[in-house]
Image 1 (cartoon, rainbow, N blue to C red):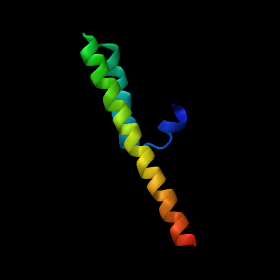
Image 2 (image 1 turned 60 degrees about the vertical axis):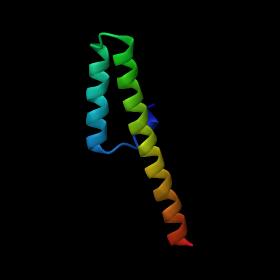
Image 3 (image 1 turned 120 degrees about the horizontal axis):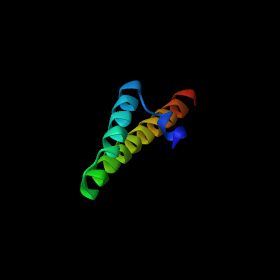
Amino acid sequence: MNVEKGLLTKAEQEIVAKLETEMLSALTLAHLNFYKNEIKMIISQAKRRHQFFLNYSKEVNV
């Protein structure tokens, strides 16, 4: 997961850190799953953004 976190912007890293902290104080499994899904969604968006930039740089350099 550290490699994935490397793709996050500074703001996204702060949000993920806050969500992880909130997970520790989650009262129910539903809350825990909510925080987990939010983190997964942020990381997924960062991966898509990274892939987009890789594809774009390949097109520009060709």
